[in-house]
Amino acid sequence: MTHYFVDNRSQPDGAHEVHAVGCKRMASDKQYLGDFLSCEEAVLSARKEYWQTASCVRCMEVLSASETARLAQLMFEFLPARATST
Image 1 (cartoon, helix red, strand yellow):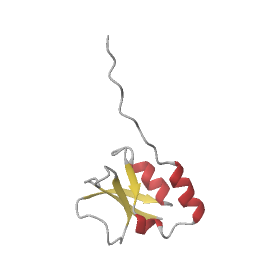
Image 2 (cartoon, rainbow, N blue to C red):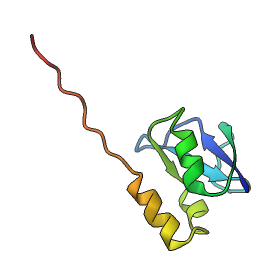
Image 3 (tube, rainbow, N blue to C red):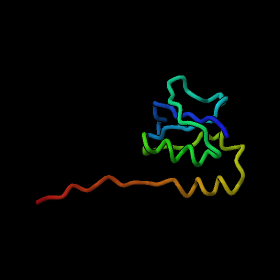
Image 4 (cartoon, rainbow, N blue to C red):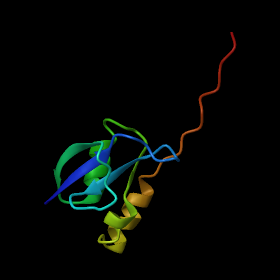
């Protein structure tokens, strides 16, 4: 199991990055998520606080191709809600 953190500040694209302990890209302004078996689990946990999350590219390099593919399926795009006129 690995310790994971999420940046409290978002990236320019609006996503909050999830990092494994020891990542050099981890921000000093971060929140501890907990111990997880995979980065995928940590990203899902981070979405409880910040809906738009992404895993750190450097932390992802250690994942297998199947884990990377599963995480890619978790990327959601949301269109702004349309205002309804009554």
